[in-house]
Image (cartoon, rainbow, N blue to C red):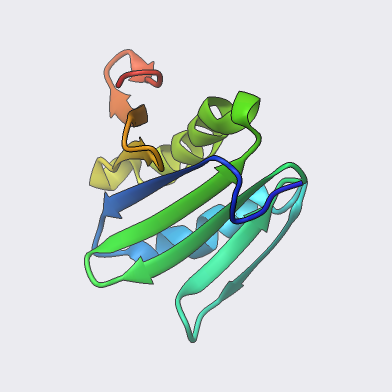
Length: 120
């Protein structure tokens, strides 16, 4: 169960195709959960049950806000970030999370050895 009081992370992912990647991410991840994307507003959400991601396409970036239970924050950063990096491999997307308390979260990027997470 999530709420606005749940631990959260945010990521601002630089891309000129924010709406395209947001829509693709919601479509893919909502196959096993609930989710929706609105083309008109350039925003969407994915509800994983105990975690939720809210996405907003803004000029030059895709903004993601993730709410999760404390023991799932890092894992959910990795799930959302890893999929986005894979979809945006051609554009070399980097997802760098920041926790609401200001501490660094995980980082996902395409590296020669594969994606990585857990950096901070």
